[in-house]
Image (cartoon, rainbow, N blue to C red; front, side):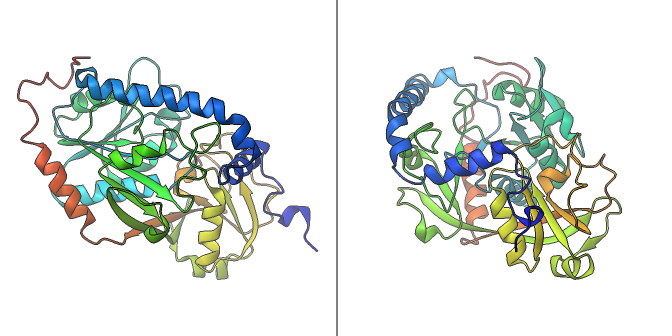
Length: 367
């Protein structure tokens, strides 16, 4: 008999459960979608007009004096964007680039002045995803809701940066960009409707305007597109003990520290749990938390496990926790096109001659 403690959703906060129910509903053009269709239509008109305005008046967008790559998504909820961004930054570094990253810094109140971090900045200062990116890649990261301001601060603090990678920001047209990568997953475009009637931030036709679509899953199952399409597979490769830094493979951890639980405060917690099971880890308990969940006041005393597995994104917020059962699961990606990063390198290299020598210094804006 399944006990309340062993049910995957036993301790799941209501916001995470609601998000899961909405994701399921948004896969179908059912009653909820039809009721909310007028609101979705209005939201689409607003976003379409914003895009049209920036296309008609490109001077409205601030252009950085270095190439800008945006990695974003149309779907709400996690699509696997962060692992792709980390792998992209590392691939650019391997090809001689000196990347810097800009992000909104979701979950923290940045204030009027952008924050720039390098090395292992605190998640409480710049946000969980930027902190993870900074720690995983060693590149400088600047956060602010105003992405041009974040980009200017990044370049002012680190003038060696020669390419800016925007973490998300596909819809933030005020930052001019040279290359756009769109990340999707097995949901495709859902019911094809814009929020709140569907899962899309913008109209589905935006897919045709990006430079490439990276599908987290089988690209053959992705909706047809007029642009480059590449598949991505994310695998859980091992775990790091937060207290000691010890490394173990997932099968070894499962054998040595059973029973094992997993906690995830990401867009798609069940994907993380499924990946662990696929890697040979039988999970005695799981807990899904809202995306960007605050771990500062959490404890896991109710989890009867010898090891508790976290995503790297959540682990950067848990360094202060005294619980010695915590392990961070590392992830890596494999792309269906082995030459994809070479293509991206060539696209960014081609942008360099097109940048005007009359652009303002790094610390100033024309907007």
